[in-house]
Amino acid sequence: MNPEEKEEIRKVISEKICELEKSVEIFKKLSKPVSPDNAIGRITRMEAISSKSINEASLAKSKQTLKTLNKNLKMIDDPDFGFCGHCQEPIPFKRLLIMPEAPFCVLCTDKLNGR
Image (spheres, rainbow, N blue to C red):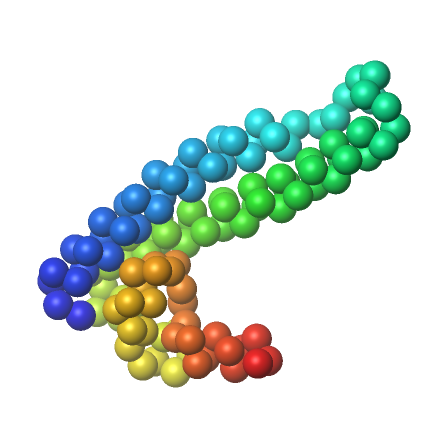
């Protein structure tokens, strides 16, 4: 990977980190407990609890992705950056632009997911 490509990926990672930090804050607010004394009705309360669960899962996923992106941003100048963690082949530049948190190439991701 040439220096220009690394710089472009660095920019993409930084932008994604900013977006995810905002999302994490939103998901934290949406994941607050649903008050039992809230007079919203049984069905609406069930929907609120379900939404809370979805938001908690989104929060956990966002935090994990944010952690991976921060790690990758620190490792971008490492000679091993951009190589598949499974087959050790280079991950295509376009894949890294789309998913800079991706630890594997598409083929290995498919294999590891049983596709």
